[in-house]
Length: 252
Image (cartoon, rainbow, N blue to C red; front, side):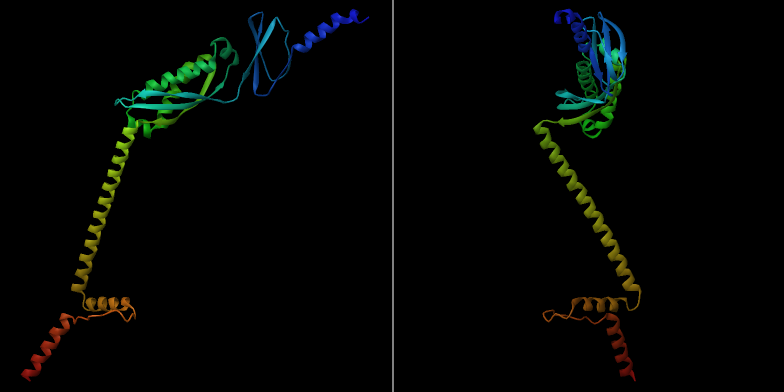
């Protein structure tokens, strides 16, 4: 009796083997007898094995590393650069049909564009304007991969390594630049201090009693310490007044 139902069992197994479940972030590109026949949306799907094949495509934003490579800058400095590509698949059927391996294709094209762009820039520009360079590479790669059904979200430069001897030169240059700025700042401070001292001297010379007030402030700042020795100078104006008073007394 069991042998009478084996065709039904085979049919059930055939149907069960064709059951597919696509996640919310996936699409399925279906080929029937080798020909593209449609794109399945997320959910429960059934295909017919042997005569049909389904390729799953992840629609989320994905990352792809650009392998570290040596690049010669415009000023003939060899540097090692790597980066990362952020991309997503917009048209799953194009990504499967128009390019053999779109992940490998993006990687190779991004490497080529990176070498081309950095080769047009000087080292200082590469070190200080990574974001602008990454945007330029992104535009080039996105323009080419758009016909593959892909969207390049952004490309970022991660590490830029320069030769060790150049690192030492750059370190000495940076130290010299910091010393230069410190010297300029000190000279500016000395100039301002001299200007303020000259202004204070002018005020004390023109304002009566200014010198005496400054003297009292100095004495007050010394404090009550017994070890301090204070030499108090008599103002010139007071000496002149005393001498004038003496002369009047003698004449009288």
